[in-house]
Image (cartoon, rainbow, N blue to C red):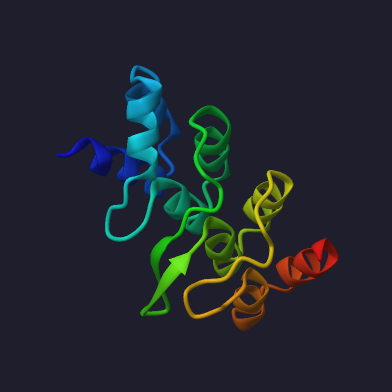
Length: 139
């Protein structure tokens, strides 16, 4: 299995211990390459945010210096969304704790997907009203 796949799978599945063991022994350049590499169109940060793994998101942002505005492709309700940033993914999936964390760390609440969908629109569409309220308060 490729290194990038190992990192992607660990982030996607919320396996923080596995991620730490694998990345903490690597150089900064190698870590940067691995955490920004796309597997199935998405990066580890995008998948951790989409799947609700806050501790993994924190590790990737704070320790690994993941770019908070990176974009990728994700699937929601059978539809592939292109150009989705981590904040959009967390909002669409209903993970308020991750939405708050990303905004507090500089994520742009108005950053859109390639089809101009905002995190606010994604939260509205899926009925995540606590996220809607939070995002409106951030504008």
